[in-house]
Length: 187
Image (cartoon, rainbow, N blue to C red; front, top):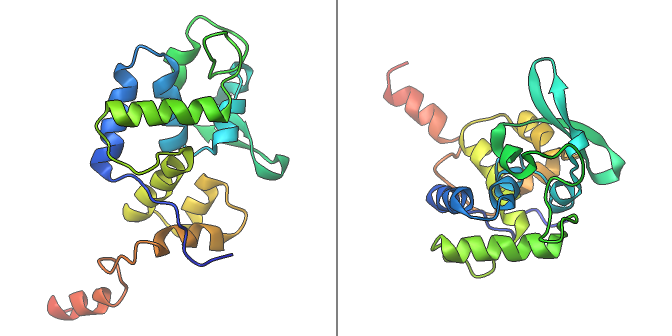
């Protein structure tokens, strides 16, 4: 496995523009799709496979039971991001196509590309994993521990999570700055 991930993430303003475009879309699935990938960090097959019956409550939290890689099941806390897509329904897939059937990953990718173009986001090739990558990088940038990011992303191996940040070659967060800052502050 290469040490760097070739996948790019959306910048903060790009992701915000995508979320806003999805929220304002006439297609009630758009915001749920965007939120499931970018705010919950789901893989595209997890988002497309989610059913209304997978929604529930656990210890006072609204949760989505997700069947992930290796047929592992995890509970993902969620905001009200998917309510609009499921409004008035008690069963079936969360993300539906115009025929009322489960949205497949190809249709979901096309929706993301449409939302990206509508929102004025200039990306060479928008694809679902960019939002998962955005999810991971947003948490890492916010200082969330690698362990907690790994758990949230449902990565079995910490090396997978570590790959995300390496592609950036971000020197702003290099650990060498910590002792330099301590010495400059006189501590």
